[in-house]
Image (tube, rainbow, N blue to C red; front, side, top):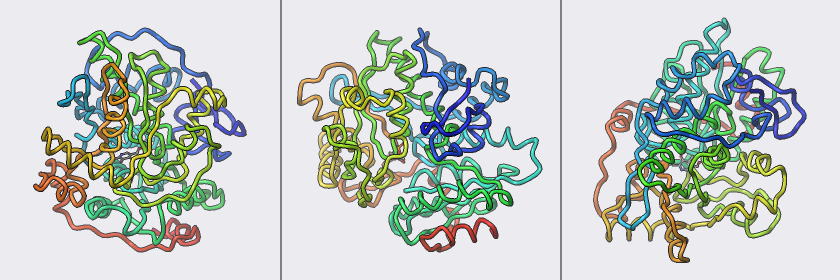
Length: 430
Ligand SMILES: *Cc1c(COP(=O)(O)O)cnc(C)c1O
């Protein structure tokens, strides 16, 4: 299968080429040339097995196709369990059992394995440049650490990620370089976009991206939704409805794409934090990107969700059809705190602030009488956001072992001005 840009001004690319370049040359996002056709699916293997099945149509005919099974085994080597919550019919899909305790480990590991494979025949080093509002950079750093032929430059907004997130970005060293930018996540993202479209720079320093816009991260995120839906359907005969906490819309768009392939997924509801550009759009207003505001769910502090272009593509640009298909809600910091404290007090359930936005939306849907089996995508382990969660539940949260190991290493990040010139200088000289 070939891939085209959401902006229609770039040539179609093979899967390998689209993965290697990250962003399309016209500034758009790569999407499949044909919208996926619904198929019949038979459960249920391991996560890696279901990942291979759901990704196979996209890999057909590509140089990476013969490696797909190995890539899935390599990337999806930790579980994504679906667990029942205390409230009947409600579940949590735990996506935080990877090396940096957030769902981004899945996509980052798949992308790293793919790029390492593609780099094997190339002499020149590849630089991955990535902006992070917290979790992306850590997942990317962990996935690419010590991969031969690849170095990583991670930009994050200084002071706007949790202390543990900052530590995880700076603790790898070797081929991983962390830059703390005196600006917002949107500044970081704009700097990265500029680097990726700077042809003169790239003639000397080959670049690629690892943000959620990258096809190599986006497509594999379908895997855990596919697997959970197949397992649930085999066990109960029911479709699984989802609430996905959303920032750049990458994770949610993967769920939407999986559903469009005929997997037994039902409704998909989108929870945001106080950055409410999507809820406003879904209420009927024009799509209007805004400056992001800092919230407790900081990995979702996004004012211009980049994957919105893919959501529009999937609905053939028909905004009314798009609006009819999704329920959204914006959940503010006070509500996030309230949900975390109450669910712990009433049921002993502990959620990270991002997951809490989705739990809140599910509570609203149930209060309206919405039926069926639902799963909240738990995007990070609460121990990653201990400074928010621990005071609310009145006890400490033990970090999962992989995260605890990272926190023991020393960390270092270089300061960087929030301008492209400063980044360009670094990329030429790191
Ligand atoms: C990145 C992230 C999100 C948002 O995911 P998108 O794909 O950007 O919508 C939600 N929760 C956590 C913990 C994250 O790290």
